[in-house]
Structure formats: structure tokens, C-alpha cells
Length: 86
Image (cartoon, rainbow, N blue to C red; front, side):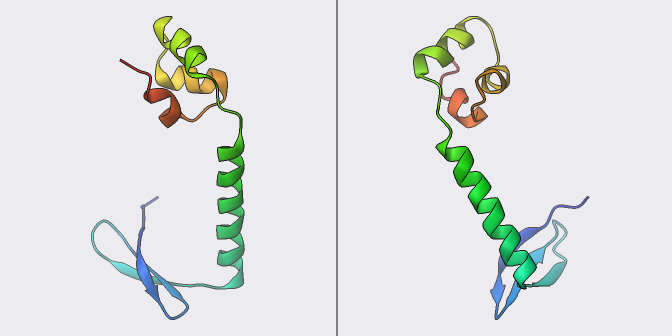
């Protein structure tokens, strides 16, 4: 599946482009708006999840686990764990 990048909006149309520069217009209908709201809510719910303590993350890193492994183990975001890698 080819990835699209949002490059802007025009009226009620979302303008997206491929890596090759081909542009497409995607109408901002109620279905798209509802999906965007759902995705935002899901992301916000993920951000509210309790985060493991730095001490807990560091203990796993020192034990030899990778950031991905620690994130999976602690149900945390990889970005939050990578800060503690040497």
C-alpha cells in the first residue's frame, strides 16, 4: 500500500500526495471526520495510560532488554522508553 502525505485543505477537501508527487483530493465528509475523531480519542486514551517509572524502565534496560522489548513488556510507548537507552 502506498503512503500518502497530507499537504493541505481546500474548501471541504483534504489534499494528499504520494511520494512521487501525485496529488489527490479527498472530500472531508462525515465518515472521514468521524474516523479522525475516533483516532484522536484512541491516541488520547493511549496518552492517559499510566507510564512506568524511570527506575522500572532503567532496570529492564540494564538487564539487556531493547527499548521495544521494554515497551512491550510494560505496555508503554517506545518513544518513552528510548529516552533511557544509553
